[in-house]
Every structure is written in structure tokens, then in C-alpha cells.
Image (cartoon, rainbow, N blue to C red; front, side, top):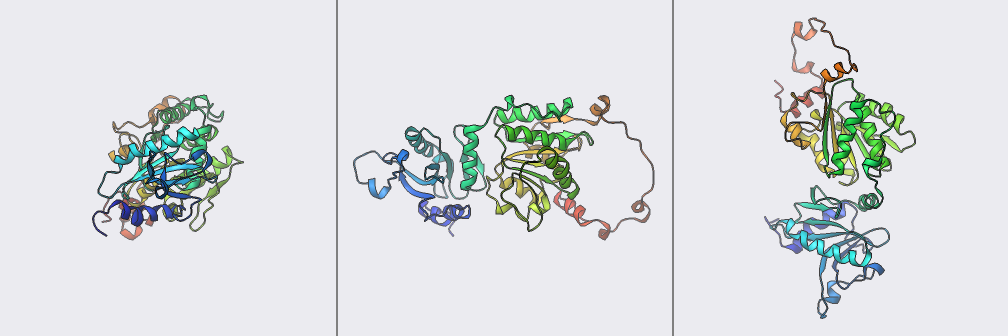
Length: 384
């Protein structure tokens, strides 16, 4: 393949396969239409006209490269394509004009993608700013987001569940929901061990679900014990009536609303989902989960991302802060061990001095558990 392609070949060789991978069969006119005239089509009656019909008449025309349709056959998303050598953002204004043409007729907003095949931008206009995504959303994802756009409530109006009764936990939830209302999509919560990070996560999920902002939630942990804790003491307790799934290797329920998995297991299955399949992803012990190949899971999905960790803020490395857009090295919310002691939610620890087996006998590479070796390698620490 050449270093750059013209628009026709960009569409045929790159964009079409990407759409097909997400269920948008190019030849299925109940799903995808090409070269739709947004000036001469009657969108309210689903009477679509194409370049072959209107190019030579004297009426005004504008042609959308792709029009994605919902299950009823109504406009769902516009895609504006540019050749690979062009910045896809150059297509933003054109795509907006097409979407405006549709809105004038139907009174409804249409999602917008603009792409050169290598970069894909998604615009949930007028609710959010355009953002770079890893792939096209499938029909179900777009219809879910459309439903949320039309039915979501203000997070300020949703009361936090009565089970969340500690002031600092309530404050953590409020910090995140306030950020979401402002359009932020990444958050980092740092809480001392024993102060209820999972409890906060469930409170957040509850608020987001009741507000209509979170219909599909993924909770990721780097150990089975943490996954099981989230599922058994979190999902089952807070959401007994919601469809939930604990993800195992080779086992995947696409119809659940709540998912709990280890990051290691989810690495094996995440590409079976669409980039838009989750509204919220919560990462427990986030400072361990965003490195090396594990990071691919987080960058693949177009979701609100919330990181949880008990590691003190002054020990967390810069990459973790940067990943969650905490550029001043200040987490979204911080509740320290010292604060927990002062508030009497924790008691002071006492040091018990003892020599361990490894201090006495030394340590060999084969003594290190496989999971720990992978964690060290993911952080760039040499095995030796």
C-alpha cells in the first residue's frame, strides 16, 4: 500500500473494512448509504437521493460520504472521509453542514465522524466536543448514546445512595460527577487502603445509571480477588436486579450491563466489543493497569474512565497522572492515610519486625510469581 491514498482508495481500502468490522455492511442499504445528497433528500420521509440522481440538475447539492442508519431507517451518523494525506479535521465543517441539513428537516441531531482512515474523530454534537477514537461505533452503541442524549438527567439532581454515608466518599463521587457535567472524561481517585474505594465506585455507578449516563459499565482489576470483590460485594449488593457478568477467558455475555474482569482476561476479548460499547470503565489499582499492552484496553474504548488507587499520590508516577489528565500531579480526589486517621476511620498500623524467607535465602527469578513478573515488565523494570 502506498504512503498515501486518494479519497476513493482511502474509503475502499481502509474506511470500508473498519466499518464492516463494526457491523456496518457497506452493501446493506438498510444500514449504510453512500454519497447522499443532504440538500435534495427528504430525510423526514426516508427518501434519500444520491449523487447519481442529482449531480446534473440545477438544484443545490451537498454529498455526505456515508450516512449510517438506525434500525428504523432514519439518519444516525454522518461520516466525512478525507484522503490519507489530509488532516481529517478538515472535514469537520463539511460534516457539520450535512448534519445541520438533516436537523432542519427532522429536528434531530446526527452523530458525526470525520476520518482519513488513520485517524477517526467522533462528535456527539451538540453535547460534547469532537474527540479522537480508535474505531467506529457500532449501531447499538450509537443508538444507546442517542437514547442517553435524549433522556439523561442532570447529575446534580441525582441523590447519592444512602449506603454511601461517609463524607469523604460522598465528596469523591461529587468531584467526579461535577467533572462529567463539565465535559471531562478521565478521573483519578486516590484513597488510603481500607477507606472503601470499591464502595465509592459502586456509588458512582449507581448515580450514573440512575441519571441515564451509564448503561454499560466495565470494572477492571489486576487480580482475581479484586475482581471478585467488585462483583460479589459491589455489583450483587448494590445492583441485585441488573444483568451482570464476571468475565472469564472464553466466556462473554454481550447482553449484560455490568461487567467485572481482570485486565489480563479482558485483554483476550476486548476487541469482540465495539469501541463505543461501554459508557464507563473503572480501573482498580489503576497505577498498575495502564502500562505496556494492558493500556490498549483503555485506549480502545471511547468511555468515561475512572481510576482508583490506594498508592499515595506522591508515589504515583507521572505517567499515571498524565493518563488520567491530572497534569498538575493532583488527582481528581485525594483522601490520605493521615486524614483517615484523623477522622478515625483507620487506626494506626504497628510495625512487626521479622526476617523473611527471601531476606534469609535470597531470591531467584523462578521464585517470582508469573503475574508479578508481568507487572514488573509492564513498568519497564528489567527482570534481572
